[in-house]
Image (cartoon, rainbow over all chains, first blue to last red; front, side, top):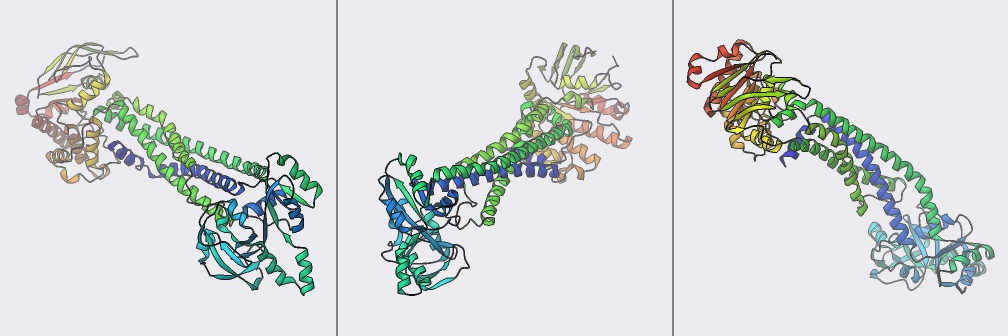
Length: 400
Length: 220
């Protein structure tokens, strides 16, 4: 313990150099923390939210947009598809189940999703309070929505048109909260779920000119997309092509699109990873130079320690302990900065309501950060410590 | 006590130093004098078991040196030798108290604050324990460095050029301080110096009472 104490005092006897080294190391470690946190959270979100969905069928357009909007709920959908066409797909021999998803409205930035009870079952979500909807205009809130908006069973609200706040309020169509889901860690936490018929009802009430017009609209009802589960994995070979070539819709495989997305993100993360590597290398060199200079400046002091009876290993341990402090401090600051950067990214991209990215997460991979910190700092201290180990007492006596 | 017979040290580069024999009883004073480059520092290093003699016999405080391995030498030095370097080398990052605590750490003994206080008090600098070396006068710093040297109650005190760059009055004080401290601990005192004043600064009465020898080394 005394070794650590004296090392601490020596370290801060050169405050500028110590602070600079801690800063440099911290920035490199913060970059690594940021990459780990973002990668972990995206990967977790993808694994969690894509589970059980073999293919997504929706309007033609960007397949990735379809996945992002319909599964992860972070983008706007490319359009709508006819309900009749989706119902036909449900009869396809390779299809086990179809879950309809209808988007279009939000309440204070949280999406109102028209769907079926099967959507709740897909994520094994449990009710914390109340029950699932039994008729149109009844809603079940995701856990995050209920917590953030302070809504309770029996609360009522009206949705706004569009998927972002500021749209026209559907004043005549009032939703009533009948259930609140327990946190599931899935996309459901941040959604407001209701029967598909609710979405139709709101928009038909809003746009139908008369009963005849309403009858036409009922006949031409649409949904935004459908989440499809196959009966057999072999369906992945033929079903998407069938949809894409014989219908006016497109089928997008989540796994494929997410792989593509991660590949595109990978270019950015590679650059950031290289940047972090350069920062860490610079920090390592800086630590090396600082400790090497410290050994040169304090050679006489170190020699005196030998004269006072300190074994060479104890003198070297003093230098290594300085590096240990640098590494520990940098690890703490690096982790804190990395968490702050990640939280800032979530805020900047306004993903906080979608919970894709945020701070204050501690995946097990984050233990890598202190390990890297100590590896860099102790690695950089090896040569100076060797210099301290071999310091000449005779030189001290001879005044050199 | 310190006893040498036929003591030699040969540097790896080939320079060989042959030292005159001495036999210094415990508790007496040896002034090691001679010009720069005559081997005073090497003699001190040999007496502190920092380097092993390449020839001859060297016994310090009953221990035949040259037979100890490095770790044993370090341990022996920690409990036997007190060292007062010419430039003092008080660590600027540490307070007076911490400088002495570091000496205990270096020697591998547990921190003993009362003993640190006693050592400082014996040299009249107990009130400075919280100060940094930069806040001490030259005389105060020398007393602190001497307190550090005798902290572990060594049987041999090695002082390297203790009067260098001091005026006559300060040099007399420094010598008196060393003599008094060594006498209070019954330690053998070795003063390595090229300062001709040192011998004359030791009062004849004390030379007679405590025992006094000079070893004059010549440049070889």
